[in-house]
Image (cartoon, rainbow, N blue to C red; front, side):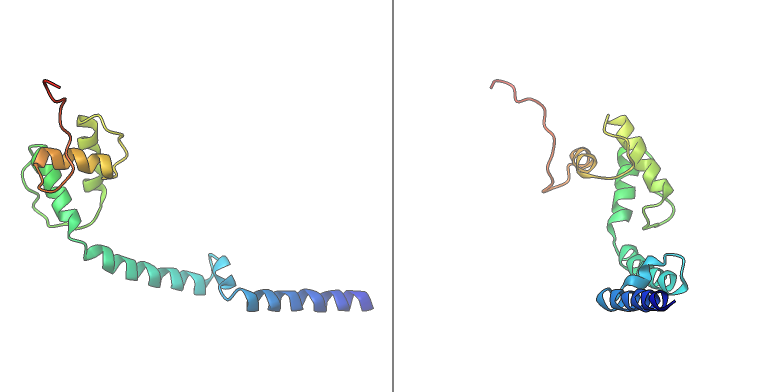
Length: 129
């Protein structure tokens, strides 16, 4: 009985030491109220930053333009399912990896089609060389 009490004391002391050494141990309780509240707060901060990014509107309109589609009626600035579909359609048409992400290769091909100033472009083979 005495050893059991000592073992319990050591186990509870270990938990206290672990909590002292790792102040974010509470985040491991992924379903806990404190962790979920913290995640919601971080998501709200991130959402504000993402919503302030004007690049998604330009990307959406550029993709619509090169694909011969009329300008969009909404000024949606989210990387939503519609924008993902526009990117995938563009990637499919230009034989790029179809992942719905406007990565470097997709951006270079798009910029080449738009003749965007200062952007890397793809050129054909130089004749006479």
